[in-house]
Image 1: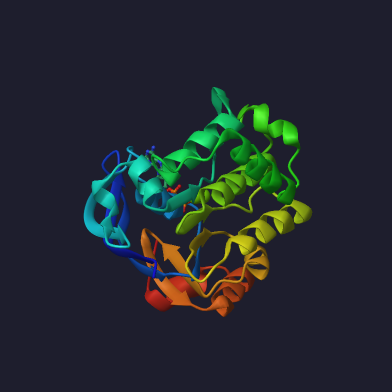
Image 2: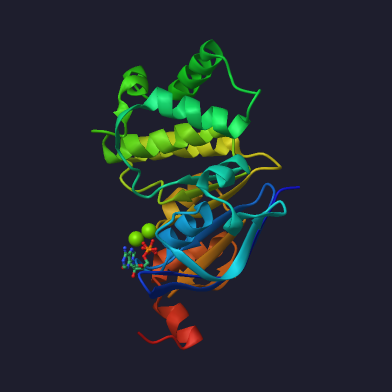
Length: 252
Ligand code: ADP
Ligand code: MG
Ligand code: MG
């Protein structure tokens, strides 16, 4: 059974402490949502879990199925089954989307288990069709000139091909109109299994009506300060975060 464990995780950037002790356990098949005001460290948490080198982990522990994530680099974390759909996906000139997807996929599958070019193309084209992406996007440079919504679909395409154990989706709904949101959410829901887990970062309840979470957490000032079920997302959407600050005596 898949298990992601995050314990007492603290991280800083350029000497500024952002994550101040994150505790979270995600079991196989669970969908966890994280909400929270801008600048509280949600993207930092996803980047630190994925292993972005610009952050310094100063304390704590994170593991996926017994693999100590903090001891291995980004590539190895991907191979271990972790995936991050970034809030702001990078553009890479000179590397086509198809080339990128194929090498990421083969790296995840491991030596000796690579897909043939024909099988890869068939699979990529089928998934692009699911996501209603124009086939020409396969041959364009990675994310270059893609609109915000196209980048988000492309992140989901990567997720579908990489078949991670745990997918972290950082504001996958931002920049999507309602039709694109439904397509992306259908793509995510099609990937839900009893084994695969999701950590979904969003500002909006709307996404969570399409992708139903089992647990909702609120992050404030680098900590997960409140957890509940889907009703917590409704309350946050209706009332904002001030009531949580009051409840916890947080001043800023
Ligand atoms: P969220 O995703 O919740 O909006 P982030 O994780 O993106 O928040 O940012 C958390 C904090 O880290 C913010 O206060 C932001 O200004 C700060 N931060 C992010 N990147 C840098 C950086 N390169 N240098 C200094 N501070 C940064
Ligand atoms: Mg933000
Ligand atoms: Mg963010």
